[in-house]
Image: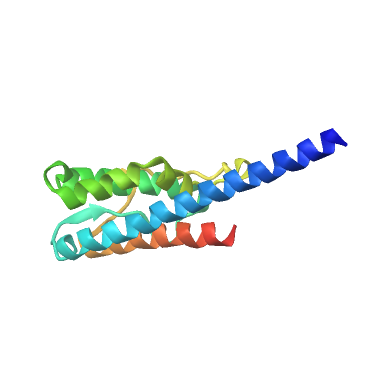
Length: 145
């Protein structure tokens, strides 16, 4: 009897911890959207072109796409000098953001993701739009779980 109670307690605790992590991921991703909105307003009219992952990226390539977005922000907009861009960049590196975008199941890991350098260059407005879509997709997936 004690073992059954202990097992039920362990299951409840794990469930609560998992829910807590998902909530933290969701909150962090919503924070990223707000930061992205601030940065997007000031930079989307830039004529600069950036390597931009495609709209419909495979689940197992979302982390690769995130890395590409981060790398482009860092290089193209010199984020170390601008506070809003630096906050966005740091939020995109946050472990909760990264885990929130890790949609790859162990059995699905056979997909081959494009290297960032192979993505076509797009205007800044398209770059930010696709990054926003990726973050919104992650929030939607977390809400479904």
